[in-house]
Image 1 (spheres, rainbow, N blue to C red):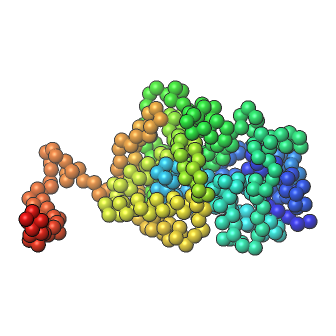
Image 2: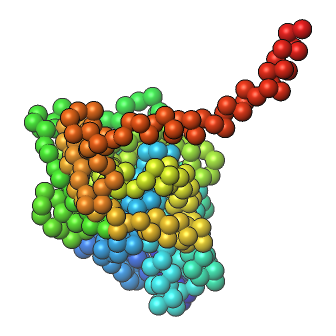
Length: 405
């Protein structure tokens, strides 16, 4: 029997897809779950996959690879799509595509499948990734093909075939979570005017439930990589997970935005990303201290392009690879500490220090101890403004006088 490897999250869509693919295509279904933070209970994933009729399931802990090979490059790039979303889901998809191809080749499967919708971005990220790595694999996308028009119909299908799912008609949220954040969709969130209900959030507390007293947190970087929190060295994955808990307890890292999807529609997106929000701010603050103005200003342009490439599913593209090299080129200097004040939904940078700092208090101060030579300013200003003096040249003045006559 021919085989298909299904990217299996254990959610409503992929749980239904296991049986649907068997019925419609007559293929042996092998499930693959990338454990990057979505589900804590691996046994539950196996139970769901086998209950739907899967012949085999691979559940692989890829959090360390995700953190080092996907999150760190995005951190160095300061990647936020449309100045907000830290790209948690978008960063996880190329990792899934990579291992989906690997397992398909290992199992000699001619097909791969995914549970992405026909109007979303993830179908692009998965399929472009798969085709880039192995264009011979055929791709099945049940959500673009099957007869179900609503999540309620999927829930009824799951109940009919005794497929265990967590979604219900009462709480129909669609969640996609990894250690960098969570995307929350469907249900009342599709009304762009309506405030997200409290029960929609998973990683962060509402402001009515955060601690009354602010908390100070120090994050330390070595060569662009966060390595310590409050002086305690931690592996990268644990540092991110612990920071999710600490910052999330203060309501930090909520995003509610109207987003331009790659497929051309606008969507209302709700995200939580406590650790990502804090670490992106920390890296930015430290880099601002150790790098020069021209680099920082130009990097903003490239960061925006990088975020678009990731969002558009072009992780394995030549341009993205080239930009990775650019952002990595200066990270040795991004070494030092950033101190934050966590207070009622805000992560406020209140202190920075680095042995590579280009900030010098004696030059910046207006108080005693100032070493800046003010006499240099006059010559600098004359040279800086020299090109613009030409704009008031004699020919222009003559033209102005002639126009009056």
